[in-house]
Image 1 (cartoon, helix red, strand yellow):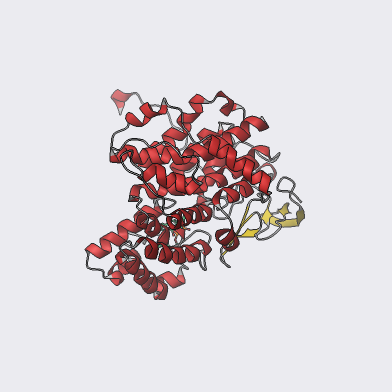
Image 2 (cartoon, helix red, strand yellow; image 1 turned 120 degrees about the vertical axis):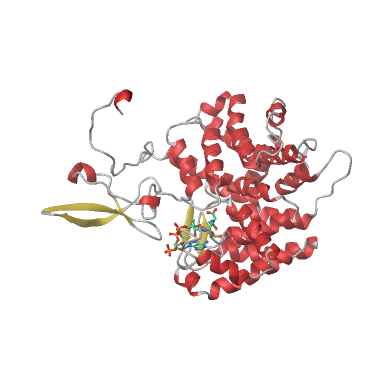
Length: 435
Ligand code: CMC
């Protein structure tokens, strides 16, 4: 069975009044099977209703497996724990996009290709200059990403394998440069060009923190921690930003446009922006005297819109395996950098109180990937508004893999949900003088 030709596992019966409908069941290789309702409207005049798509499978996919009840996450079958321990971000990127772990030669070629494309077009310097200094780096990153398509006419060749491969390599190579320059713009420092003798994460650190007037040495433990964060963020099946990439891509817009849309979707505090929101919350708790119970109570108050950022997940209802790995990494990074661990201490106390609280227990709200990742970013010197930029660099291979799978699948159609209309019935236009 391939992602493109899913097996059928019998049918499910649906009775609507006197009408009996047999709906095919799509069989997964692991996890939830699905009832195929594609012909439901044609046969019954009814559509399905699922706000937030919590129960809707929009595609078949062979990329990432996630079991939220058991806390399992695998990329192309490989457990996240093994990849986090033994792999590198670029190897994981290759795995996600091309489907298998690379051989030595394949990895060398891929790394060489990505390294070769790290420079962005010099004209783009003006692009950064034109934004205000306090522009949020996510806005700059999203704009820069779609802006890159203006330089590469082959971006539009979305069905040409060679052109697609070049676009993929360009995106992976250039996103860190765009991200770092959006930061340099914000702090008013000169843009730092990539150094192709450095590894992927080390180069990002170099472009962010080096200045022309001083020598900058990348701390290998910090580069390793950043590489780990990128691996943990690399894919997460059909989340909001990935679904956005697929949706935009389904219109046959180019890959830069699709990824830029994904970056915008990731920005929100309910999604990738949660890592920034976590640190803001921890800082507020510290400034407020460190009473974590008070803030847990605030999160529980139905009359208060405050939510505990970094807690809860649409799919994980037991624990988020990425959070477990990140918590251990945070301990290592704080020890290696000697960063202030007051926030880490508050985070741990907050977790402890929340995990014992009936409200959080009954709703199965656990720390997610964003709960501890912000602490690592902060310990390695990232300002808060750069956390989600880094998340986007990590998620990029996943977005690309999902876009590629979507564009190559014969089942793909333009994404176009239906609605249940609840507005007024037909009425006659009233001229403005009579209203
Ligand atoms: N703090 C307090 N209450 C919460 C929280 C929270 N963080 N998360 C969920 N709840 C409550 C929610 O109010 C609801 O309660 P009730 O049943 O009484 O109305 C119940 O738990 C179920 O929540 P939901 O909003 O229906 O769940 P969802 O699946 O629609 O939302 C979520 C998932 C991640 C958006 C949500 O848990 C949340 O807002 N968390 C905080 C933001 C966050 O950490 N986002 C990052 C997610 S992981 C990484 C990523 O996607 O980028």
